[in-house]
Amino acid sequence: MLRMPRLCSIALPFSNPLYFRLQSLQPSDMTRVLLPGDRVPSTSAASAATTLHLGPGIQSVVVPSSHKGKSKATSDEMDTDEKPGKEAEGDEEDEEVVANRAGLLGLQEDNKSQKYWIEGTSRRYIPQAPEPVIGIIIARHAEGYRVDIGSSQAASLDALAFEGATKRNKPNLKVGTLVYGHLLATPPFSEPEISCVDAATQKAAGFGELAGGFLIRHVELGRCRALLSPKHPILERLGAQFAFEIAVGMNGRVWVKAGDDDTEKLIAMIAELRGDE
Image (cartoon, rainbow, N blue to C red; front, side, top):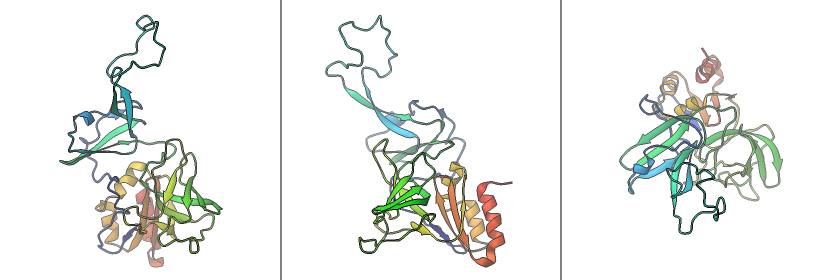
């Protein structure tokens, strides 16, 4: 959660080194359209000293070296004694970085790292660790909660995934409560899982229950990513006018809260954050 007192600097919601944000979108940064399965260019040219970070829409796949760069063989070219799908003995495997969704390729790089992601829109949010999300409690059980994060399936939230929570002392959240957390790494095709503590510090770091305020839904994902920048022009300008709190989820949801005297300013702020004319 980003707290915005007057002229106060913004802290990122958590300090996970794998997390990156879109600070300023330049035309040269995102000029290539990729479709699912397309190979991400330039990743193979990275040196051993360069750290490669794969963001939303990008994944690493294992490809047999004998198939790399070759077209699919026809039935006439296939050896009749070789079973389809069986690789030759001693065949080496290479890793390739490919897109798993359609959109514009995003890139941030420096001398030590390269960061790639796909900037696109979709009807449903596709969970990607460790992105921050705003969820709604939809069910309770003995070990935790089921949380709607706008994806194809609900996420699980452990009752102990809060700062200071123990088996005897854990939060008692009701159905309908808003929570701010970040996605945890989970195996493919498993349900998403979120946590309300920073993995690096084991502190809340702004995560947890969101009491009061207003929830803005269906915000463009690209706009959400830009709002996570501590120097976003909209947040800097509004922060100079009145004090407010804001939590930005990469699932297209933004939560804002201000004092009772600033209700009209908050309504105008909500319209601006949504991109309404």
